Image (cartoon, rainbow, N blue to C red):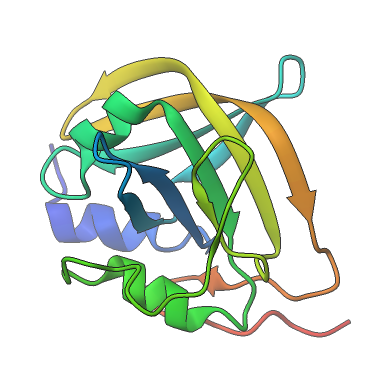
Length: 160
């Protein structure tokens, strides 16, 4: 290997991504949420998406046990949610306005879009677990701008 971990992270940071908060619930029916930018579409038929969670932290095992999720794709007005669900605080939902979606996972109504889904397949991948999920419900609010992540920062989407 001719590169180190920092070089690898810097190279990956050159790919601009949207930001989402993936929500679920644990065995006690308590809400879970984590900020992710490792999200992608996989298939239109069947409708599949994927996201990945690190084994260390992020409640990976609880997400695995739940099997039902909501991917809340954040608008540029939801930076507070990005920061909150990326933080190490224990009760990330305290004081956060949310509703319960069709599959029981928390949803943020002002999100750019919401994809409710369930586990289709799981794939071990190094220090992460890849969740491939079948989408069961879609809510889209396309009149807002996306929250973007690029080179460790959150640039504004250029207006047309």
